[in-house]
Length: 162
Image: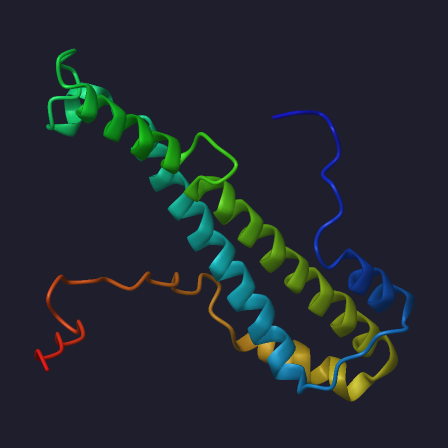
């Protein structure tokens, strides 16, 4: 990791406006809590998917089982290299794209926290409702489960020839 500060997030201008009090949002206090919780859960899921993408990029050629460790099978070597690069190895890799999503979700979370804090500072009833919901949330919410796909199930039917 570099010591350079991260560039401003995609919603940094909105976060600054919320912090300054010039931006508001009209939603129920409970919704602020749920948005914050779900942003956190989504960020955990993104980090999990990034670890999986990185693990794919670290699989050795021989472990792919398609002959990529055989110098005569250049197409297998090319295919493995492309998959490894797609996992983590370019600006267009799964890992890099997920990082962009992470930054957006993080900014959405920070934005909502800023607005919620402003409301809590100025409205005692709002603050009480937020604190009440926070007290009832489980300490460790269940992670978001990624959808599991099963080939051939739920797929569109092929069109009959005309």
